[in-house]
Length: 110
Image (tube, rainbow, N blue to C red):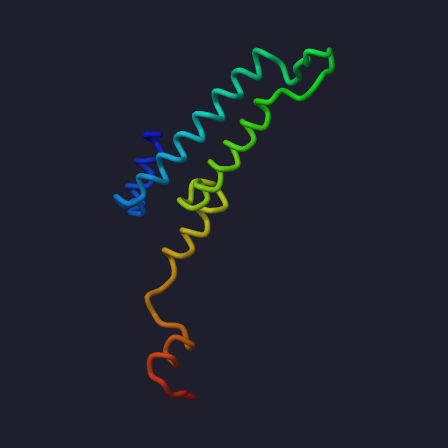
């Protein structure tokens, strides 16, 4: 998590109000890791009291935690694809597009 915080601070994306979202990321990631480790020990299936084989309930826990963590990661540009979008935004010039110029001036220029 320290790597994530450092990356966000260096890219000047992180603000104090983001602490709740980052806490969610940390908790969901932790839950995913714990569920995955337990699944490695227990296996992917469980036997019911009637002897039926079923999917281990922790599979859903791990999947849900992973999904939620990924959503937060996307918001902060913590995936390869999301980072490219942030980089493109940073590289955009400060010049207004023709549309922005039109809106600001209130008249069309040709």
